[in-house]
Image: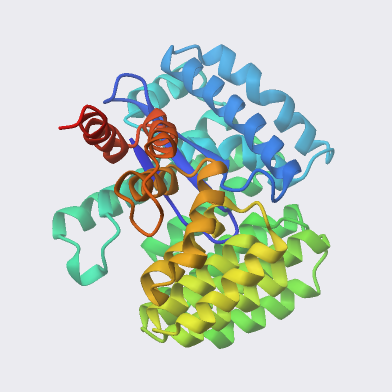
Length: 398
């Protein structure tokens, strides 16, 4: 099962790895653009390996092994040798685990005074709350979904609160308590203040709080701006300040999209790009420009993306789509599709393979068609597999 999340500031594709197709699973994040930021790509591979190891140990009920895995990072953060964000990276994968409640219960039973166990189960519960609720707007959410949402938020709050006395610097506990507060009307600002008392340089807790004061959660642009200015004066690193600024612009862009103010949203995403220099911000600016029916602005954004990130497979593919679908311009679309296909994008591989097979805007070339269709099929592209059957019939003269 593959789930794609276009998350500004994260640039990830989430792959749900299920052991047997159903049952317990874990979502692992990998950068969409390995070439855009090589250190981040290497780090993501390391975190994925750590997450998968954690998942396998927890599934096997090797609770002592899980404790041993996390303790060095807890010790290092307590001694101020790593950042809150370094520690958070190790715990974040618990939010992607599904159908694992009994395993978390077993871990708590085995180690009731374990900070790692309490925090991990608290993270799992808060994410389970959102899974119970679903992603639709409040007026489209059923009473049953809302009840499940609140029930798991309360379970998460109980677990996270219990964790606070078990560790010297429970900043991540406060971070997730802020997330819980969004759904249970808690005092998010007081929770943030406690986190910053422990670690004035913490970033993730600030990002979590910023989300609670967006208009969709009852806040306002004015509140967000005040908090952004406050953060600029904080003890955070410059990288942390950049993250907060990026999240500020992305939140405004998402709000504008909800309000169908697409031109404003495109502009906010572009401001996010100027703050963070993240490729995805340009992609989102282009996407929302298409929503605004401003194809010229969309191409301007994509041209800037490709100029800055020439090996962006996602960017090349999307620019090709804009040329083909918005401008009916095959002359520019096809080179982008070929470049994206050669960089591993299965949609482009299948699309250009179909073009070569049918002679759509290019001369028929069954050898090239097979090359690209087989590349896409090897990645599990079902349409490409079906197109290969058609290609086989064509080659047999049917």
